[in-house]
Image 1 (cartoon, rainbow, N blue to C red):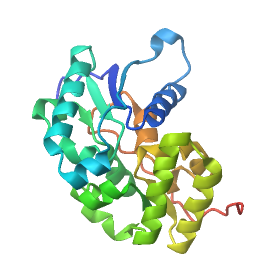
Image 2: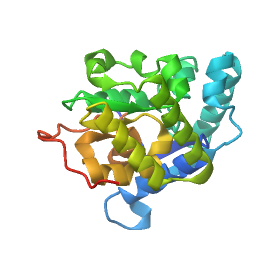
Image 3: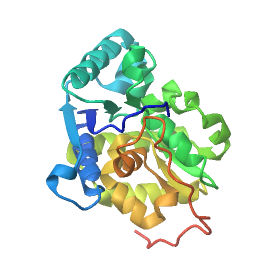
Length: 255
């Protein structure tokens, strides 16, 4: 953290990708704030823009300039409106963030980097739940620190990845769908012999509370939850504090 750094109090949230996930993130952020009067809570500027092109499709078809330009425009507008820190509530969109103006990137909290930092403080194997676009683009592979944890991150085989991707898009359409999401996550966690899960798509934040209740916070890596619980902090200071030794994989109730 640089000398003279001022703790941010206005968070700019670029969402709408999908809109339910970004709305849930804002709810989580306020729910995680310390008790106090309204006036003690941070100001949040949410730009929920569902008109963004589908990120997986944009990666597949090479619509890089369109996505980058739209991201730069929306992020700059949030800064103009008073935000002093930014977060993009879409992992797949992080593919394009390396191309935005460096002045904007300096204000961004990277969900991918937060995820890598959290995994560095864990042990055991983790199942990565992400979109096909995130997988195709290798978004996590480029994150600082990822090389140190990649050997513990399990990627679903193509048929299972298709099931994960399909579930993500169903949650975009219909909401949390815990009766579908929790059984699938548990089935895959067991099938791949993993201790925990990485919520590598923001749609899984819709069921993060349920997954965390089942596996525990040390075994449910959710960067949105981390940002919500630690804001305000410097953009590079969102890594979780050291976790207690996780011990055995928790027993779960069959679904």
